[in-house]
Image 1 (cartoon, one colour):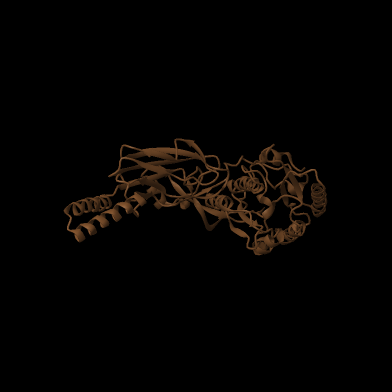
Image 2: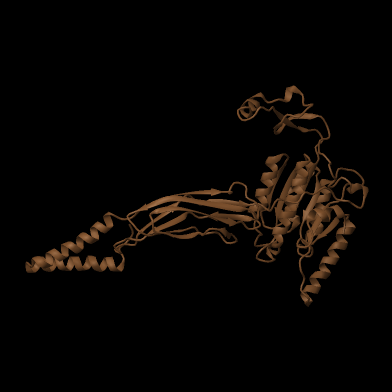
Length: 422
């Protein structure tokens, strides 16, 4: 029970006044009335409403943009005839079915509702709140909270499968080829992940303990998958500077960049490549160390889901400096997702990254820059920005960078990549 309401404080003051007058004057009527009012206040606070509520959230495990989050509430309230239940939804959540604010008059708290998730982001779903007012209107009532604060990291919508890039040169044929696998040599002893047995697998790689656990559900063999020698690596740089926060309330430039980055990362990971990720644009870039397998796909997806455009734009040069050790060791293929004309250090950063990733061959595969088209206003400043973009494209072409201009609202990235250079 909370504090006394103004009406409750008035009753308590009246009870104390009547009791004082009764004692001072020896008036039994005043004493009786004061005792009745005091008993009303005390009993109202003693027998306050009690609330019990439990909440279950369905779909908060690995949610994707546009998916449905379901919430179910079960509980009861005693000592009150009316109770209200409120579930505050984070910004961007759209109520799909039911209602997140309800009034219950039967003492049973049983309700469900669902909400559609936004495209991407990290959100906190606060606990449900139940309020049961004091029937005697003396105190504030009972306020209860159900469940803990639930963290919801919304990954981008399931990426459209990317098959290949029809590159303009022979050196780029292997950039995103259809069916290209990363396994180049014999298996090493470096464990990668568990997978179901496939015909032709040697018996020595069967994991008998994992098979025994899996056999409790279905009869199937489980084998250890090991890394292969000479595995190719890919490194993806994603611009998360302040300028990528522009766009509509439904999708920012960074949302499009994240969707494209996850589509490309998923393509490589499904083909066994080691994939690393750098989110640059803030003084301390975010790195996802290069790995392969389904676990790496989840790590990349979560990093892109929880990232937010920085307050400053540190540029690709800072991201490359934070990653140069991996670039020099892994010698990866390079993919950069960033808008043109916003980062003065884009050309220098790509030149540095390519030099670190060079393998000594005369003509290594060219880096790929995926640049979403950002609408430019028909103003002098817009004309200046367009000129900067055109100049940056010429500089990148001279450097040997394959530039791909992408209009996210008009064409999926998979169709654009299959069409080759723009």
